[in-house]
Image (cartoon, rainbow, N blue to C red; front, side):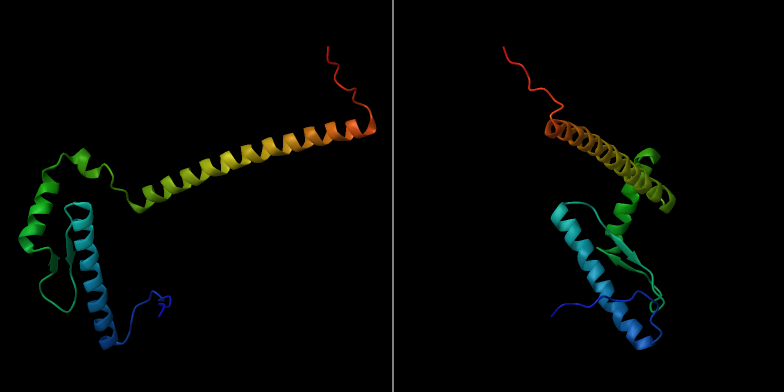
Length: 136
């Protein structure tokens, strides 16, 4: 059975929202576990929710503390090396797409020039204006 696309909006029904939360949380924790296992990376998750007083963590509170401490001990440049905020992310995407557009425009211009050049040459050949090349 295929899944239908879920409309992302706040769920007003409390019991339905709690059930969805539990399912999604379980799936998220599983993904973090898989990422950690399959790629051999340190990964953790901290989930705050209105239903519990304590946040839920993966792999364990001690494991999360170890990972966060390891991250904080890194030099600030290393910490922020691959971090982006939404503005920076969008600027990077816009720049990348602009480069692709520029490349495609150049390709289109080259193809149009070739089409015009070869079109004019073939018209001239059909009208007999071009002399056959002389080979010695």
